[in-house]
Length: 422
Image (tube, rainbow, N blue to C red; front, side):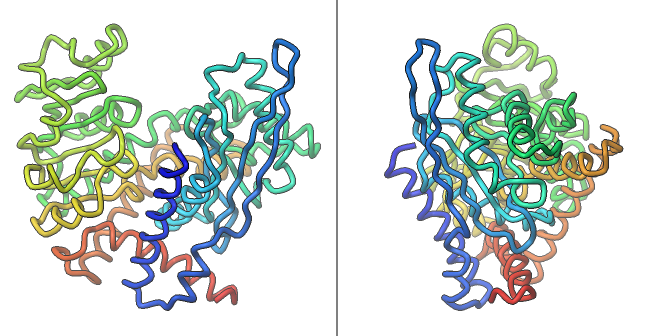
């Protein structure tokens, strides 16, 4: 993202923190203590390219807060990564990990590179160089990276191996999101979407008594959107609409998520699915008369402009930041429940914790056990946030997001006070 966008992201992260601090009745000293990362590392990574020249790439690792445990967060490769962006995302990881009840603080890493322009060999050299540069600042008890934008299990495998080469220690738990052959979990693939479905089910129980028979629209049919649709369908919901970047489809009788996925894989888009009643735009999907809306595409798709026309009574954020602050407030006033991304899409980091624990135990957890623990954790966290929201807040004045961030910040502050840091 641009420098302006990165600054805006950091400003938004600080605004969210400030609001949570004020809601909890803490002073400016707490805000200042939580606003600044504990450490930000900038590195310069030399890579000998295939043509023989040497290029230098800039990378960062922000370690925001460690009151609850080792720093945890992904590493992204993107040509517009900035230090401000990485700092903001590390702060958000602190709250996501705290809300999920994980023994982690927040961290985030990034390298300013377009990975699509590198050969496999160049990409491997970059990945190994980044880990060499930050090796003394990471470890299974210090900072545990994972995949993020444009990084994947193969890159994590290279990074884990480089950590071994630098330290001489075989710590599989230094990195999560690894290939299954190197201590990763297959559950990771379904984690975000499955977690979204579980949270939707749990909130639906509290709103209507269950998810069965409730109509669902899913905007975005990538990994998170597809698995959210698939598992909601299996839970008894009726998925009536899905979309991708080229448009969407609608069927009042319901769609089969697996059949739609096969069509998308074969043709490049869900719009070619012949079993739908009609095609719709992404904008139309958001305003359908459904019970549950799952925005799983990009940020800021629900705004003050379309919020008055949204008919869903439950919105579950699979994407990061799909709802603007003003839209969130407007929807709360209308009684629409918006389950924030910090709660709804935490399945990935919850599964990272399961993988980390499994690595440290020597590989005892089965995929069945991993999925069961993921489901239990997401269901438990949804219940805790719902109860905290209804106990401590006027739900028509305060969206669930206020409760989620307040609960997360409170957990971090309590840990810091117990440690003598506040």
